[in-house]
Length: 283
Length: 283
Image 1: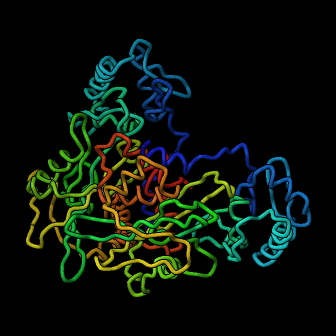
Image 2: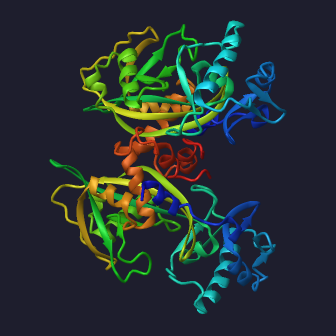
Image 3: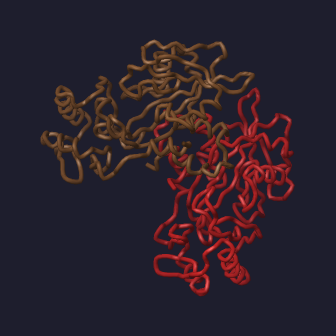
């Protein structure tokens, strides 16, 4: 087990198992053949061929596309084909900052393989014994990754909310961090990956933030999604990431990025370049 | 002018103008057609075809390859065809940490388009007015990038020297930083790029280090390569990187990486993903 194993998990997918979702000449998602066949049953919305999925002619703006796709997803949801429905909209974009082609229910992003964005917060405490990190244990009844180790706070990035606003909201809900404390979090970069997960194809960009917390701060979960929090020496966090799959797959990536920025993984590691390159996709 | 312009400069090259240098089935360099024609005059060492350059059969280990290539380069040097000869060996590798296929004179790396490694040091000072950075102005008589703005210290990574050792050596020679102070520098990641420069094709991985210096430290150049040093507020460094080409092309990239890690370029910038992705090649 090694950091490279964690990275490989985040990059494992089979391009032959998907058809590109092509909008305005750009690949904005990747649809499994099974889902593509299902979408072909809605020819007024999706144009499905053997090698691509597109939207029907006439669906050429944000509003009409969003409405048409939402109708299809609504029908699929009614038949139990869109698990983990959230009631939260995600933009469909090629890249952060680009004009969204349309928006979709969050649970459908993995179904269509569209790109999602999120925020992850490294909760750090500097003490006399060195640097420690707050580790959350996800509740056993969570629908995704039950019982896995997690960040102090993290969340998906919905349409219409700033990244910092979203971080402050998640920090409050998930860890009881007061807004004025959460606002001190510093954006430090991002990680990106594309991989097959039980829910579909994840194609995510996660914005990483570091927050140094006072020694007397104690997190408190308010939404029932966390079983417990504990403060770990950073070396223990890294060993657990390196040697086990106990951390949620994408949390491991953000922790590896932290370790590189802190110099805890350094160029004297022969895997350094491969690790560092593995933290982001080229596109 | 923008950060993306600085990144574009570091990624500008024309694949059609090069033939891959293929060793043991791997592309370890890229040779311009002109240089390829010249290498074809040494058929006992180079096998040159229309679409690739390889080493002659029988040159199958580090020692024999290094010796044979050195003989060709020696002849080319004698005719003035390898400018900026350094008398320093670089490994020829696909990736940091891999076993080198052979070694070559540093000046020939850009000629054959092989990958080079280097270290760059962000020299930082934390004061009451915020963060500042030491900026060097390269001597007007330097052969590469004369008069350009530069890091406090930086250097290429030769065969047989550790990255940290090299950093300490360069910090001493270029900025008069005592070894015990330089040893506090922290590895924080890397940047990589491939671009055409006057000397040939640069395909570089630069290991980035941050060093916080005491307020009373004053750098002193000992090798004549720096005209002057000055301490700039970080916002001025970033504005100069963003709005001008005054910084050396690759120094700009390392400064942009620093700005991302410090949160001075943040996800609220619509170019964030493109900037962050532009700091490293996929391979």
